[in-house]
Image (cartoon, rainbow, N blue to C red; front, side, top):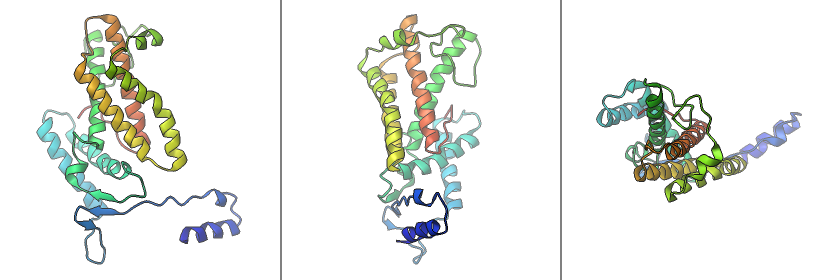
Amino acid sequence: MHFQQFFKVLELMGYPWAKGQVHVPYGLFRFEHGKLSTRRGEVIKMGELLNEAVTKTKAIIEEKNPQLADKDTVAEQVGISAMIFNKLYTNRIKDTVFSWDLMLNFDGETGPYVQYAHARACSVLEKAASAVTGQNDEQCSPCHCGLDPQSSCDGSQTFSLQVEDEAFEVLRIIYDFPAKIEEAAEKYEPFMIARQLVALAQAFNSFYHHHVVLVDNKDVRKARLALVAAVQTQLEIGLKLLGMSAPRAM
């Protein structure tokens, strides 16, 4: 009712864009034991929450990858993004349960899980580029084939070699992504993008565990690197659409 009245006031004031306004409601944040309550003092201040997310994420990184360069930056990217993803992973009208263990889980349906899949794809592309140039590259390789930076890949021939079930599943999810983005925008439901990102990360990890990417066969190697490059691009786009970071290493 409040927003109906507010939009009507804007219309009566003569603003031509007033009729295009939409109220997009969303659910509450809850602790695992119940909902937040300002009356009982059971609230978390946003500044404290963000700082705690970064601190906890850095501790996880110290345990999983103590040699990671620029851990403070990555911890901030992952910690804050984890909070965003936690809220956007469910239908917006549903309540969101606040749990550090669930939110910062690198192996579950979480922001860090998707970001790690992106970092893994970047790592594969960088190794391929390094094998060609003989030196490390801090950026994700722009060359899909990873064999000759001066050559161009034949997309139809490359993807025709993706015959494995795991590869086909990755390609299917990537193919469906544009339609999911449009539907999410039409329905004001970012969770559709978040769910698609998790599905892609899961499919890519399955492909990665079942098939060696940097094989000796140049045609197969080119095809699999093209797939990895497509995954990296789609994950980066999806993460940024949700307002999240896409770190290249974790």
